[in-house]
Length: 332
Image (cartoon, rainbow, N blue to C red; front, top):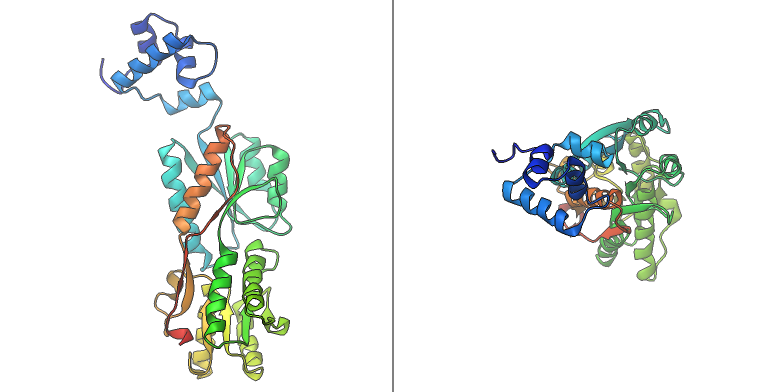
């Protein structure tokens, strides 16, 4: 009997039991005596039996697919994040015999997400973004399918995994304040994204810890088009700010570009930092002070949580404290 080529039928004949009994022993479901179960497991171990994935899926009523929902409004700054998250997810899902199906979502259009759930194409879903008004999460809760969100949420019924963005943003801002930058401007994206609000809270908390108040007039949110950065920069120079903190490196890159056009020297005339770093800033001149996160580990943690949930394990949300503050030329 060649290794890796045996079937459930072969095991049943060799042990003198039914194929149903073998299947139950392998899946752990159904009534099988402990002695019989152990005989099957010992035989499998000895002959290195690997069940056919389709047969196993049918036996356990699983697809062995996981859906990953990716909003299609991700821009250049989000792509490296998604790629690293996907790498972490793929390594974990592959180890457990799962494949990944990516579903693109445009705005609040749930058509694609509904289709893969209604057609029973996946055993669970990973949402790669959390929203303040989170329609996709509400739909998934109503559908009853296991799902995990990448990004924190205030909904206690949603299991999520996230980097400790609040502590990271607070720490970086505190360092800048300690370096004498008391009037810092903040530029960020959509206020409907939970990550935007979390970063803002960390920024404000740093001021409070220093016995200061962050100036609301220096906070610019919902800046989803970099074309607005030039106008904001002119306003900030009039307000004589000590520096600018961008919520992501796409915005930071645009500030550098605009400063270059206006012959504004960074850091002599304006200091700059980013709450997120990716390959976009690797070749920036000057180099930019930023936060580094382990996005691959974030994706892996989300995938493991979801697989545990699918298997019926009790799981809880996780905050990963795997960040580092990188001080560079832009804030000297």
